[in-house]
Image (cartoon, rainbow, N blue to C red; front, side):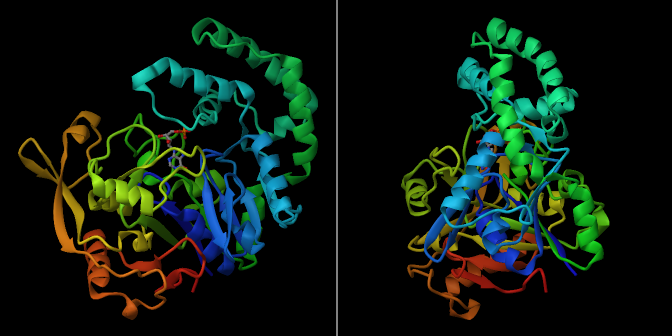
Length: 429
Ligand code: IMP
């Protein structure tokens, strides 16, 4: 039996949603273990596009989807997502969705603080998604957060919100020059959410543990990417949770020995949204071509993604930080038509070559990418379904990625649709 974690190896938007949707066919349960509706997972099935922010991407395969304790949930967005799926013919019943009683709730003040802080920071902003993710994790760490167990207990909920709102309103008004919030408005709104969501709230850790004992297969769905990890990413230009595979355990309530494999999703080039250093970023026509051809706009905020060549310093960092057992290369088709491709193999800093990702952002910002140039391919490869049918130059590109990452490629994605994929080795078999 296999229990597999899927993580992004770059700065998010690697195409995890598609790979999770694809592999969910072989799993019984799909679990989100961190982050919130800052994520946007795009799936294309039978020509129809679906975007989810909170509900695991396994929902289209009609699998049981769990939202773990490591997440932060905006109940309004979750209810909207349930309605959206229903309108698209997918009724998410109590057997299909369960939410951890320990998951934290995103409150209106979290969103307002996120947006007002970014505005106040001006040029120094992080470029957050403005969804209240950071302020919510902040309250979790300082033990002032509100969890699903609190939301579904009206007395506890009112008491907790009342206490914290005094402080939040002071901060909003006096420091951020923003509007204070009304307690009764919040209670009224959130009571409605509680009524809708209470039946889905349960002990996720227990559900997973029972399923593993019964020999079921679990897929753990990471969000964002390794270099947005709050510890290991380009801090402070990161999200507020641990995005690395190890957090699948803490964020879902299981022990590390249950995990049997970790697949890192690698976009065939690199993108990033929001601020922060990006050594292989392209500011020329090639960057524009990748952005347009790859439709590189954020699924959550619609922001234009910054684009650059594949960076294997980052990739090797991800292999180590996540203990990757295999890679899934996505959006390989987007590189078609480039005469030459570049792969960043190291950085030059102060006259020396660096092969490891530096923690110091001043150093990282001053790093110049060292490139290896290899021939591209003119063909459209999106209709190819066998490795041996790929152009030789495409195979050379893949071989070089495997060599530099010292990790086998298990999946190749050649387009957004489920079927536009070559599975070389199924992690669940
Ligand atoms: P936050 O997660 O909204 O606090 O944003 C912090 C940083 O993470 C910003 O640079 C965001 O653009 C980035 N970010 C958050 N979620 C995603 C995602 O799903 N894909 C790509 N970037 C993300």
